[in-house]
Amino acid sequence: MNWTVSRKMFVIGIFVFLGVGVLVGNNFYTNNSIANTAELTALRNHQAAIVNRVIQSHLNLMLAAMDSIVDKDEGRVDEELKESIDTDIASISDDLNE
Image (tube, rainbow, N blue to C red; front, side, top):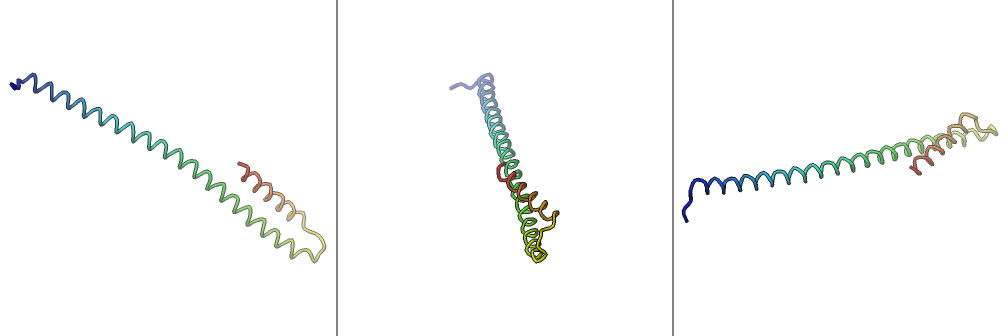
């Protein structure tokens, strides 16, 4: 087969076109993967924040419960303690329904 300069340039052009096509495909796949991972990471960060708020509210609720047990000898629970308990219960309910 006689390889002329024009035929060689044509074959080189085809390889260049195929190479650019592979690069474009790889770029598209990588960008899709990064976008999906970023969305998943944002969701997991949001879920972790909710868990941390529930844990904090639970700790506050346990401390308030212990204080109310200690204060039961007085025969009444302090109003601030009741408000703290109600607030923590509402916070946990809201976070778990989210």
